Length: 570
Image (cartoon, rainbow, N blue to C red; front, side, top):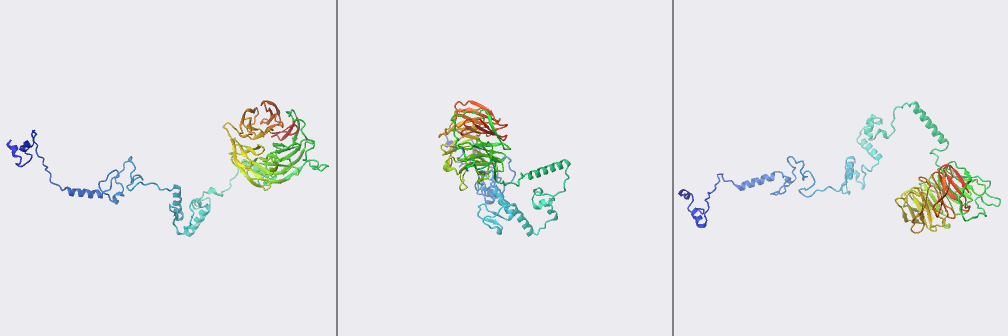
């Protein structure tokens, strides 16, 4: 006990006497702790640590730095290996940079490559702002050429000029297109031009084929069917006895006693006459307006013929002016003139009596349908449906295009005037019907349904209230010509086969019957009210493409087909 007490100093506050005086409770005795290590200067240690930290590079994984780093430390590269799955750091990517967020420049890769290749090729380039040219002082033009907008001839010229300036000789081997040096110096495939090589000996079979092909080509050129012959001489031949009768009347003058004998129409029963003169299929036939004393026919043999219907029943005149097949024909109101459209991309306006071409119109596209405005004061206005989806309107007096109706998505097939000729309906290969105001190129009614098919032929009922449209799903659909142009679901004429053929549909003059050809060579007749099939006539030996009811003879019908024969039925 004395030994313990002697270990405390007399004035120590932690002596047992003092503790007993300052605290009433008893506590265990504690020995003082003393370090055996020598004393160390902490200030010098902190200064040395700070100096070491400012000299070594920064760790990019740190989120907090206890000192202010220098610029050399910020831009120093990362030392040591990188973790393969670590997030992108400032040294290996463009995210979370020490001085901010780095983004890609707003410059397209194509534009950068263009200026890069231009600089390495020509020695100049445009800066990213596009306001200044950097590089060659001789190319300080406002809009200098680049490697992408220079034509190949300019590339070759500059290459030759550079070679001449550098006095680079062209090796002799580079002048032979068959050598590899030629490819290196011209930077072009040897197959781009004519490559001369040793002649190859033909076998007997190849020689016979070449001789046969040359003979066939020479024979075609001798017949005048070669490509060199593009111009066609317009001419017309009269086949009648005389162009004027003893009273001075023209052969196109209708008879004075021609009138309707009976207002009621009847279905024909037998073929009374055949007109044979076309060497290929007949694509369209048209009776002369009002009287029907003449019949106009267009054929695939590039000719148009007109036939006498009432008296001699012979061909009166042949019109030859198209170099390819004739697609459509259309009479004027008085029948003195008519239009023809051919696959030679020309529309010709003919004089029926003399056979002279009054004018020719073309847009460079194939006309599929031609029509004159039915109004008497607008007989000089021509409408044509073209293969480029447009309906083009010409003024034939001036020969200028006055309007274009461009809304269809396919070739235009028909043009039909309705509502006292103030509007017209067009059909197209885009399987739709569009209604237009005449002279205004804006569609006022658009008819298109998922179940609709193309309609290559449309006819107007004699009472002008209905349209009959030949649909390529083997049926005839009826639409109203009133404001809404609605489909009449109660009237539908079917039974014939027209899928794939532009067979014509027409009405009898009294409106009691609907008539149409079909792809199997028959002419079908339906009753308008009951939609019941009345009769079927076996017409040509092939496709019956056209059928026309005589305007005055109420029981006579003309049909045509791809066998080149026009039949007259009574």
